[in-house]
Length: 460
Image 1 (cartoon, one colour):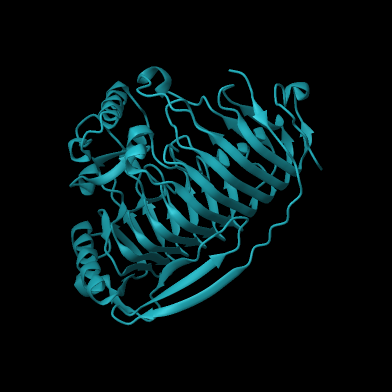
Image 2 (cartoon, one colour):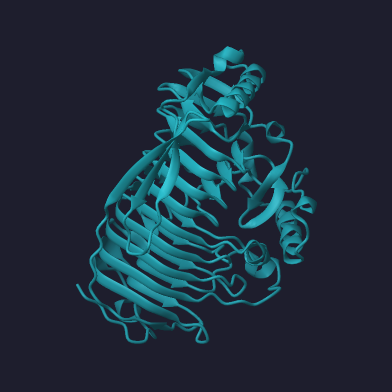
């Protein structure tokens, strides 16, 4: 595949200011706050719930017992039902509480006190019945996410405690044997046929589609603040088809297979700030669905601001795709640090393929420092298919236009390349601007770093 790009360079200045406002939802005793991050695009205000004045309902009120999965699971469910009626916080006190899946409801805050640990069962049957969810951009009915909120408004997870997954079974499911891959082929073809989602039931003896840890599915006004998330069967925090999401002061420690930190998918108006990520895959993986399913849902991911986060480990700081068929636009990542020794592949990696369609535009990354990259600072590739290349056919060919990618004030210590763009001649990448993007050492093949890039320029 040849490399084609049209690049221009100019200097811009971006500032990051925050405006705050709030109003009181008297009916539910929930304060609705608003935050407006400044960004290099027209960023709307983001609304999110504040439960500080809401009633507190301890799970022990309904008979939760540390170590007793039956009593604790039932108590959490009853406390959530009461909190939803009043607008309240479900309080998990200090101690370790073994539980099955938790299904949140509107007007509920799951609050973990300091020293509290919600320990999630390793048994797949504890995540049944199957729920309306997704797998790598394809909708289906699968095991419930460990924490699941579906069509909720004003929903939160807060506190100084920890949500932790037992990994006994999920570790076995990290492997992807033939039976699992055949199930994925079946799901891929059902989605390509636009079959009803209700027909795509993936709970059986062989599919082994691991659930997400935390999924907000079709929710509005979402807050995650302060908690620690440890281990994950699959993607860790997954806002899916959501509007107005704030994630702040959250810590993620997850080194299993596909353990991205945050995966916004077809989600709009979102802020992630002051978080810590130590995970086994991408820190921020921005997505918008796969192929026909995303074209059906027709919802781009847009208006995302990420700032002041620290990443200890991972594959990419910011990954966009490869599930991006609904389109991705208006992403701003600013003032993040990557710890020495993280050994990432790229700082920014935009990936798609001939099946995706969608688009990527208006991506801004600024003020980032990092150590060694296994690859480079910016990678853009339009033929990334992984195991899917030979697993299933291309049903409909749709290329992905990629444009308006801006990197400014980026430092790395040791890289193979500053930027590499691999695209089709019939769909060139356009307007990639690098301003003060530098590396101390280029390891090899420096003469080929920008081979076949049209009009490339750098300004230090």
